Amino acid sequence: MSNLHMKLRPFIASSIAALSLLSVAPAAFAQQGGANRGQAASSLPPALRAAVLSGNSQAISRALTTLAGGNPQQMAALAAQVVAAAEGILATNPQAAIAIAGAAVDAVRSTSVQNSAPQQTETVITTAARIFVSPAAQRVAPDAAASLANATLQVASTTSNSALIANTARSAVATAENLLATNPAAAVQLAGAAVQSVSSSTVSQTSPNQTMEVATTAARILINPQAQQAAAQSVGSIAVAVSQLVSNPAVYQSSPTGAVAVMANAYSASTSQSVSTANPGAGASVTQVLNAASTSNALGSANPNNSTQINAILANKGTNPTSPTNTQKVEQRDVKSPEFPVESEQNNTTSPN
Image (cartoon, rainbow, N blue to C red; front, side, top):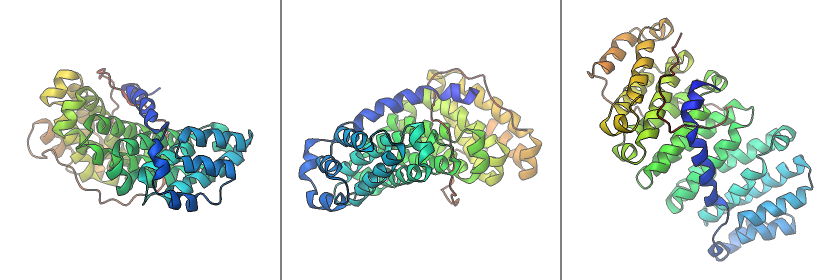
């Protein structure tokens, strides 16, 4: 297991705990948007349609299991229909859509389903991501949207589809940033899971633009005072992770300016009073990563000012903590498992080549 994975491991426990928000939809769902839900579920088998109309994710899961009869391809096909029904009611009943989509995502969690029906698995994950990142879902049920983001990111990360993982992480970290004002601790946790998921070399090498976008958004979250107050130790761990991530030559080369800005934010966050108290090793670890990055030939060839800019960060001059806006276009690829730590063990860093 990589040093980065070890640093971020505690986030997976938080992600699993968050799934409880999706387990049972409130009974009130049954009274909301019933006509629209009935129309969206009209093509489903009767038992599954009844479960979807109930808005209860556990009932949906039971119906899916029964109807699939142990056939992974059938399970994936039914899950794709269920998540399509969820998206069909998103505009009128976002909370029910989130609960229904959660059951569909859970249905494609197993390796046998993913291997037997990769296209339908991708459809379920992509549709669920559209649901949790939608303004409607985040406005009406921000915590439930974040829980769906965690669940979807976990499932995406177990596939071998790097583009899918990267795109899901991109949507998840955007959801985290939108959650920051109301639930900063959950926002930090979700940002950590997103960074973890793009930390594998396969994902970062094949989807460097998306990886940079995830790092950029996560770094914006890290410098937020509310985030630092709510989850200081985790902020320190993620600061180390994002500094390592953008020091990867492939990621750095996708946007040298963006990479330097992420480094500045990571350094600022890790050396802030609240974070350095809760996670004393974080600042030293980020400093170590940045020192290595400042002497990297690969980074220097991509940006002649690399050394000067990084040294300015370390000297606390110029390059103020800032976060470039997301101007990069994102392509689709794959990612691995999201597990981010909350521990304060920080002497493991990777040097860029």
